[in-house]
Length: 312
Image (cartoon, rainbow, N blue to C red; front, side):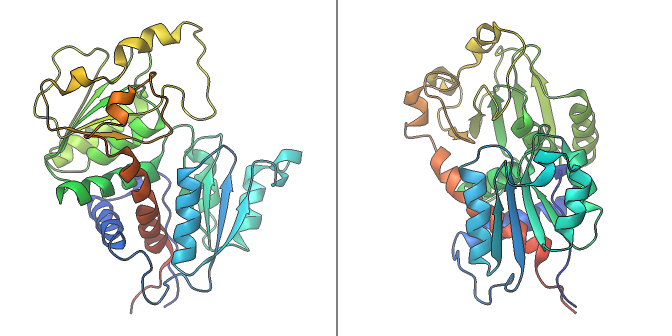
């Protein structure tokens, strides 16, 4: 029947079944990163990053090549949006030439939804200002590989309620029995719209997702402690004294007092001594670099899910 056209713009667009399919496939790819048959052979994937990226850009470019696709890479100064062309017109043009585009932009998901309105080209959100869905799926893939499941896991997230935190919350809200505790600095929590969507999804699935702006009464028996850098790529904070607010939320070994078996995850890049101590990041409980490697397997699963041939 030919290739399908699906999009990954927000985790919230996926059903629980679809999340599980992508995560399971990513874990499967980790056992054989070069699948037989090259399911994306003959297709062309655009890789557009208007902001810096090491892991996500490399993961998707490598994933596309391993699946048999060719890639066209665009840097922040390569598209005519820099000379005044609208994002809408750019998307319309690209959709006539590319089979899929992996995009990291300075805007929000609305820009990518406009690109996705053109039927032919799959659109994959590699991070917008409000959400990082491919990171959440890669994180779930890491959990699947480590624990053999994504149900009933307990995760403590400490740090800013940024686009990674938003995607994690939306993903965990779909998983029955999952527990995600977010501890975010006052004034730096996840946005109201995301919280509302998370509450609806969690109520339906039986997941537990909660957010507080302090580190009091931390839960015990946590499976994973997770943090991100204090300054999200390409952003700045208006309050010149923001570091004072964030200081108590640094991840140190004291967080392991009530959960000594917890693993540590970080979406990287990390700033040792800022959001996490070197003792934690480089310690025996850290799987941050394993987590980074899993981004390629998850990217393969996302691309295949978006673009592989339909059956029947």
